[in-house]
Amino acid sequence: MDNPSREKIESVVSRISRIPKSEFADDVLIREELGIDSLMAMEIVATLEREFSIEIDETEMFDIQTVGEFSQFVEARIRKSHG
Image (cartoon, rainbow, N blue to C red):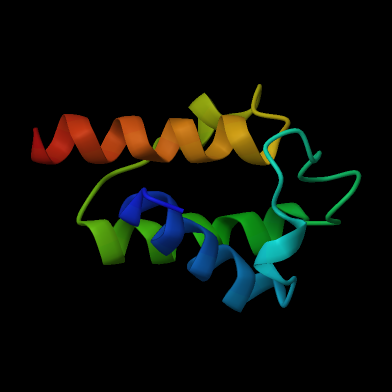
């Protein structure tokens, strides 16, 4: 993987959810297939905000369904914040 932001995002999600990074294909459904619930998602978001010094509005995440969409969403916030 050539994207260090994506690698770090997946490491955080893996650590908190205890799901191996090998299961994080772009089209995998976050809630249905990985079983990440809202409490776990809040912990993931808070950790990513700290690690990347970004702010994430949780209401913007309601439409995110897949691992790929989530990674793109967070990467966009990183670029916006550090661009």
